[in-house]
Length: 390
Image (cartoon, rainbow, N blue to C red):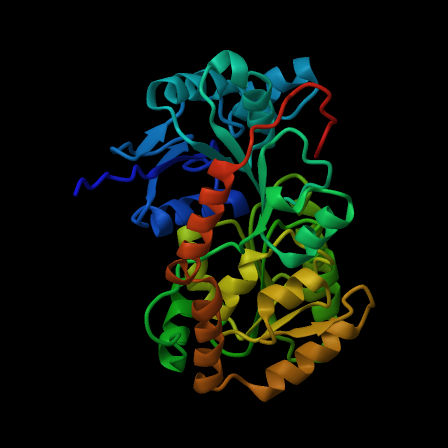
């Protein structure tokens, strides 16, 4: 009997921001590569914007959005530095595609994907384009072959808009979950607070995300904490900062006082330490593409207060408090109750276990593999007559 070896499906994970930034899609692609790279039947290579190279991690030359050149060049095409960063990787991605002939390009950088779709015939390799829709973008999805939806809400939205179901698959974002229960020891938490120059005594409310009025609504969180009676909990804001962050910091200084809050931008690997100092997590955004920060907070055993939206309901899976955060005063009332109730170690352990059971990479790896297999079998889309998407 002759045994024929089955070739693994070759997948390029492409995300120009990996190694440059630690936003949602960058952390997802970094962790997805680490979590899925040894999955049977898959041959995965990560293409990133910066960092060390190895046999399965390659750096694409690019004009990084964090420098001054990308925004400058963006003015000439009326786009931002992120678009310039994506487009600058295009010729180097084409070279890699022609050399290694992947079956699938897995990506969230839509502008790079559009160019690969447009020039696929000229590139000369019949790769499939698999768009990971964590933004989220909305139908039509006519410049990609297959769409990775990360929450049921957006899959249902796409199908209701007339998208072909055979070109969409819902598989949630995954996340690395540490072994064992979360650390809830009060003395170690006090030590961390001292090291990070945070108040050792009292309660801490943490919110993680872009420190801005837009999307994450950090101003709403500031105003709600300001309504609480003295002694108020300390408000800890951790996330990316830009010109819009100044208004949030000024508001917090006015409403909470110089010592009533802390706002910091730290590297992603350091955020876990800040979760460990807190008593409760909240995010005031009224919608999310997915919201990996909810999983991060659950991993650290924190009680969570979030807006009652289908995506948050899916991600939290019954482990959060969902209320209408469009209404002033609602968050303040919930914070009073949650902080008074405390956080029992067994409840904290249950929260981490809920993430492990639903979103850890060993659990999700077969679903991602099936998605890649389905994508590899789908007919290529024809660029002619396409509509603009996203």
